[in-house]
Amino acid sequence: MIIDRVAHVLARRLARWRSAPALHPHGVLCTGTLTVPDAGTEWGVPWLDGSGSYPVTVRWSRALGLPRGLPDGLGLAVRVEGADGPGSALDLLFTSSRPGRFGRHLPLPRSDALKGPYSTLLSYRVGDRARVLAAFPVHDPDARREDVRPTLWQELARRPVRFALRAAAPDEPWRTFATLSLEAAHTAPPTGTVSYDPYAHHLPGLHPTERLRRLRDAAYSGSRHGRTADDRDR
Image 1 (cartoon, rainbow, N blue to C red):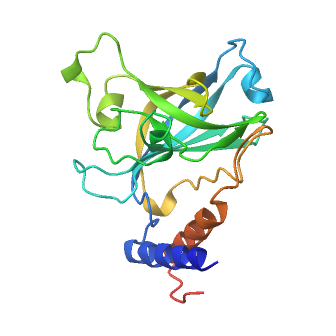
Image 2: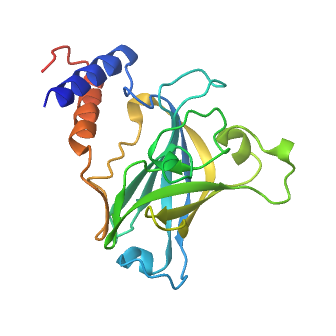
Image 3: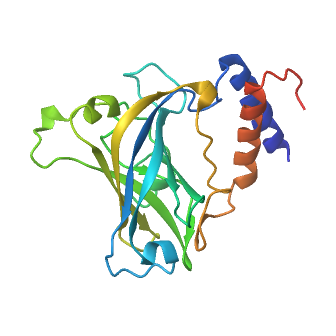
């Protein structure tokens, strides 16, 4: 399709110019833990209907790479290690958004990393239903409003950063399926960043729907080719 070709070429050229990914070029790499509680909620997904704790690698980044302080689309990419057994991985990609029925499908530029929720924007198949997944920051109830820091770096210097991971279909309220705790942060160089792919790393009964997959794959392919310094547009 023409739109896929255009997305590939644009992402390729932007990545070549930046010598970094076309989108989310720079970020903060965090390590932490994701916990699925034994809450008695039935999702129809073996991983969610059980319980356990898993190590995670999380990359927080700015979509356009604008200077800090300016609103930008914020990304929260989560890799859950061992979610489906040793050597397996689950990738979840969240973008700053609103929690409402329509706002959860639209990216929301934001300057404060912890001011509001992040969502998958597009739906996931969760058991037998299509649901949007979201990460809601959990603030310390004892912290004064002016004490909430605007970046993950600053907040992690004081305490772990926590998110409640929730899911909802259009006719459902948000329901928590896991908690995410980020405990340490490291600089994520563009040339050595973790490559997250929710289509390659998913679980039985929990995977992104196919909507816009071709467009996303074309853009990511262009970005990867641009970073390899291959100057020919193919």
